[in-house]
Amino acid sequence: MFYIMCIFMVGLVLGLVVVASNPSPYFGALGLVVVSGMGCGLLMGHGAPFLSLVLFLIYLGGMLVVFAYSAALAAEPYPETLGSRSVLFNAVGYVGAVLVGGLIFSSSWFGGLWPTLDEGFEFSLVRGDMGGVALMYSSGGGLLVLSGGVLLLTLFVVLEVCRGMSRGTLRAV
Image 1 (cartoon, rainbow, N blue to C red):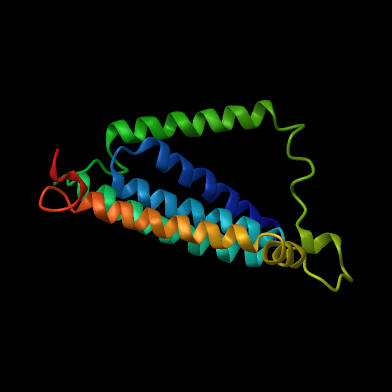
Image 2: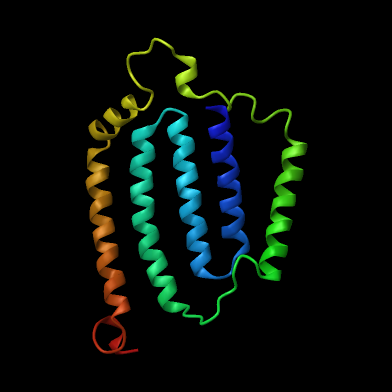
């Protein structure tokens, strides 16, 4: 389990480097999908599989909308790839900064973050995230309904703005 968690952490950092160093929206969105998958894998390894699944589905749904919108706005015939000189130079700089920061802070900050939830409680009857799920639906039910309504309103606003000059709100501009 320790090696799998290390793979998730390295994948998370490399995905963040791809997002930070890439100017093209296509490869930036790919990096965000990798980051969300690795982050949800970390959450799952630390004992929150339901939260991981919910975050992954919500995040990928949002990323699909953002990717489609950014790809429509920035239609480049030849986007910069991960192997371009400028992107590679930025990526090497970010990885170097992460390594230097890791060497500076390696002795103090992550001491309690390595063990997973399942390694600490051998005879536990309830998983670590079930209390949070019950609390989310009992105390946060109204907030979930309000959030769903706000997301629906946001969808209608974006669709109205994207219709453009022919009809809709941007007709007078």
